[in-house]
Image (cartoon, rainbow over all chains, first blue to last red):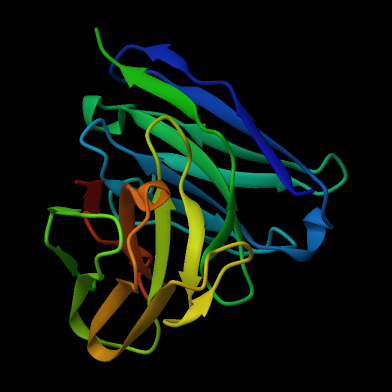
Length: 118
Length: 104
């Protein structure tokens, strides 16, 4: 059974930093690209970052480029999201998602909540 | 960036009723994906590559479309289908704003 378990969310002040983790199991982690997707309090879904299966390639939307860094440790079956210069608009539920071979997100974790507030 | 517009934003249907919701893309795309989300849970892959049903999705669901216009149809509404459905395209990883489907 594919499982993705996020952790590391919390309350952070504007301008602060936080690192999220996603522990993967039930599949060959190193064979899949992985992504982070967030859901805002208004329930809007936003893609945040994607990393290739081997970790060599990363992709970000302009809204987080330069502030967020996605990485992975294939030996530990773990995905990470380092977030810095956090803003109130980064407040959201952050989901780890597996990138299916069809280009969609075929499995999602249960999410971890980030709140950016003073 | 391709913008996806879903309509309607909210809809309700009676058990047994046929349901259709649409997703319009600002530019032509090759495929559309759909996710189902119920309150307090994470999104689930529901329909991928426009018309392929994800594992476990009932056959009353179908997806269709091409170019800039795509749709998700339920042939006969059931109470368990009440949820929010999001469309998604892989070119620029954008999502629609969702259609909330309620049971009457």
